[in-house]
Image 1 (tube, helix red, strand yellow):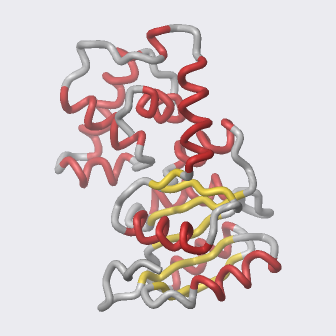
Image 2 (cartoon, rainbow, N blue to C red):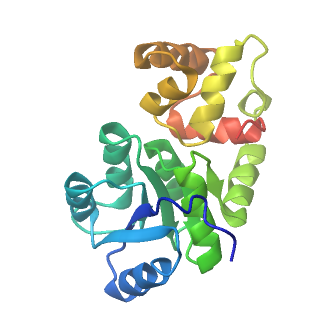
Length: 221
């Protein structure tokens, strides 16, 4: 097993999955890592938000299909209300719609449940450090989708994008919400929104999932 990212502080993690047979063993296994503390095991998004309100959290390991509040809506809420918390999706679904919806909502990582324990631990550490993590299956699917689009303008960015607009697109491709992008670039959230509006208009980008796809196709994410 690789060394912990920081021996002086354990990463506080929530495991969210509606199936107790998945949630509880996963929480137990992750808790065996020296640098991870599972602070809650949640059966739906409302339980995740309650746990986040009760104590500091670094990473949420998020299933997508849950009752009451699903993983997409929960990720969106966390991105808006607690942008310092990283979301890593862990799901059986690797279809385009699920992947793009999760990344568009602000997920920093996306793994399928074929991932092993060490893969999940590495993804949690990377996400907590601000890095984007996509497993190989997800990366391949996004690239295949982007390259299959018939129009060249869907695959190539226009030459008149500014350096800042490219930086913003790169961070969108990494799954960061506007507030986190503003913090990374040391600009206001209003300025980020202005750059996004200009970027979308110039590049013909329809929405945030489309921006994620374009960033990956352009090799920016």
